[in-house]
Image (cartoon, rainbow over all chains, first blue to last red; front, side, top):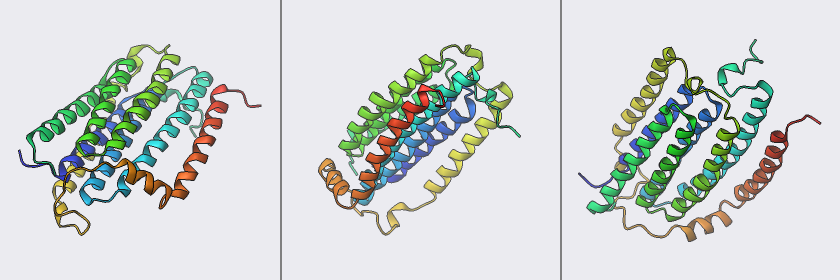
Length: 102
Length: 173
């Protein structure tokens, strides 16, 4: 085992991001899709913090703080919308939200 | 960075925790199980921040993700609890495209990452030293270089607070 390099953290981020993609594409439950999005945001945060560490520049960590803030805002709004749609369509499955289908 | 065997073990342990529980979150039959395995994922990511020496981000991760977003998601799961479990996942014929899409994403990213010589890029440190506390530097950055985005963030959070309450309450009047 060599010393940890930037690539270690980037590969971990890539793996977490792909699992997020898997979650988004696999889940029919709208809240499950939101979980996948949170996984992807976490993956991008790992990359930002890793770059911040390996360049010795604090800006990456500051960006990560903003991403966490946006993730919290996104979760709150998205969940409100999902709950509203759930009451409207009486279903949590993304397959049933077809009202805007052309 | 840290050549110590301890920090390498910590990295691989937290990586295994993160990836394993994220996979469980992606594939669990019951959405409640997904929500609770996300708990382990978020703690694992906090541990990775710890390995990276980013103390502030590790604490923020636990406070915001575990204390805020996860609780919100669990609320959402419990409020929409009338869904039979067999309707949680896509139909089996959709598994293959989903796995191909995410697998291709990973292969492309990993190929690009391992094919790049990161240490030769101009901004990279030649020698990554010991981790230093980051909280003071982040605070200073937020109130100098990033003051405008910081203030916009507070306005955004206020708008989100009002908007989410408005949307969730339902009714159009």
